[in-house]
Length: 317
Image 1 (tube, rainbow, N blue to C red):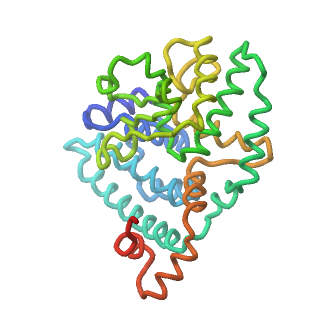
Image 2 (tube, helix red, strand yellow):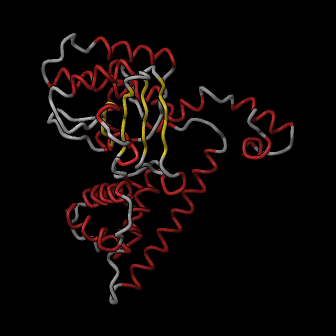
Image 3 (cartoon, helix red, strand yellow):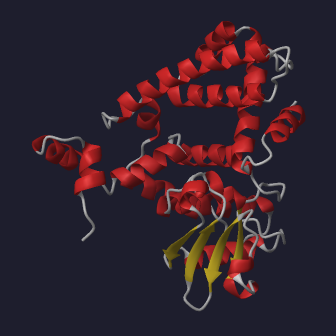
């Protein structure tokens, strides 16, 4: 089924980024599994029924919006002269629902209150330290098997997101010493790179593939030296089992996918009975560095909204 979905989307969208493509494939695959159907035409033949099934299956406004957006992308790939009217009508109805959902999302975001998922996956600084300590203590002194390496990988994943609350694009990264690279500028732009700079003993994260690359372009993030020793040790052990330099691999020595990383990270909190979330981790990172209550009071006193305070009045000093 995935092969059919991918071929149709690729044929109609040759310039689609790989990240977006894989997101569409994953979402449509889950939708068809949920509908217990292999006929993609079901997505437009009865949009009222589809919307009902979607709302039963996906309670989060964000999840439902993503599924509807992917559905519309898929439907545009199915248009023929004979079904154009039906598909365009369905797309129009799905777009109406997406607009309603985004209004709900925006109304919730503006309150700066935690939603249910964030409440369940929010962890404190003390819990972060506890999880980190447990994962570190789980790593054997000598890495001799893939099971041992996976324990080290899990610790690396947790510390990575603790230090840099990125998205799942780290899956598309290879790790190198700078001495292994002749010219960084000539590296293929189709993947990302974690580069260990031996002389400076620091880590550089080169982001070629990420969500906002069309707007922000390629990004280079310096992580300094606080992760250098750990990543050096990880790379040396990684090299025992694989030679392809992928930063994060599975027990089968294959590059892990973005959905897999999301699941792995979510389960890392089980050591203290918690379920984690990469998305919530991003909220935690900002919340720990921004006093939203102070900004809200200031915005109230100055008779404007929070976004105006941050976008217009706040200046770098």
